[in-house]
Image (cartoon, rainbow over all chains, first blue to last red; front, side, top):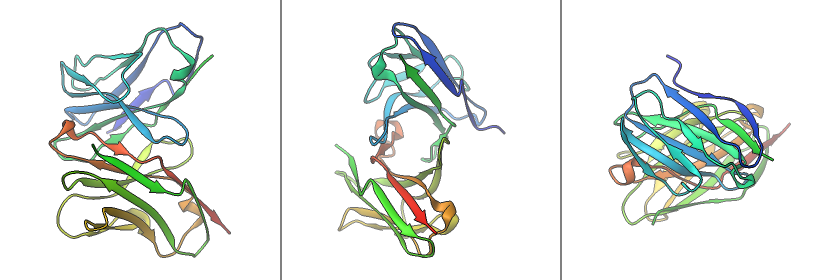
Length: 111
Length: 115
């Protein structure tokens, strides 16, 4: 049982490039989340999903897109990367109970 | 709207001293409350949570927190700090059943432990 896995661990992008951050969970959780963490700011919710085929915006969705075609996978897409998207990105999932389980994160730098 | 305030972005204690990390929340309804810990270059790990019932909650690694509704607080304590406790700690709230159980995080408190 690997829990929540994220790839890549690190990535450097140039301004205007695109990429997909991968998130997979093997716990059969319906709920999945993407957060970004900026120094001194805590974590902010980007998008979330309550099940396959259902996604919704969080607090800071601009510049990102998501899809949820399976229960296991919840990729986050960055189109036209900007320096403001330099951050650490965390994926999380939870079962019907309240506790969220976090992946190890992806550290993204946009230059 | 919910919000979480963590007093002190940095807290430094000596090994063996009491650890006290403060968290206050604002919510129109009783929330669910969490403390997460983040070690350097790692993800977040749940320390403890309060949902209902006993207001004093015990977590992993000797930490505990007390939910005080009248003070809208959920402070984290540990009687005796250990060097391995050095990490960043995040308080979070959720309105389970509303907003699909999303977590609202405080800005975090970095704990340093001096030998």
